[in-house]
Image (cartoon, rainbow, N blue to C red; front, side, top):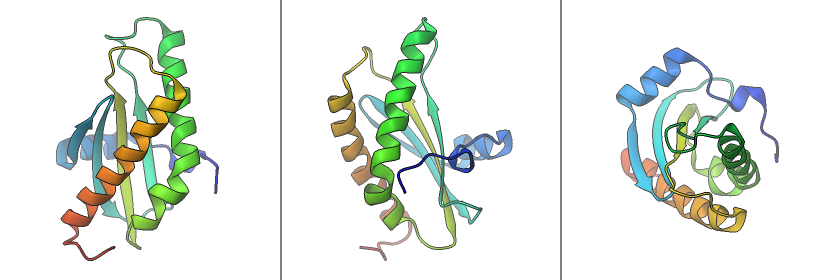
Length: 132
């Protein structure tokens, strides 16, 4: 379960456009999250990680941040996210790092846990509060 396979990555331009045009979003510093629940595909979550080139000019910095976010997602998805996704649905998810500086792994991990709780709460509100 602690894997991050190609099928879990959001690559389709059509799905990305749908996510940003029809999805909901919230800000939990240092992340901005866009999400949309759609009909089921092959996996329950498809995720896209972004670090703006405008804020981080050097590719090494952008890659470092993306590696950290991917690793945090890989470790936390099975406990914090997957159990709350309804059967027959796929969650399209975009995580944009909007922080002004590069934080260490432990702080990013702590913020990510809050991010998952907030995301689950918003998904439950959208579905009418049927889940736990």
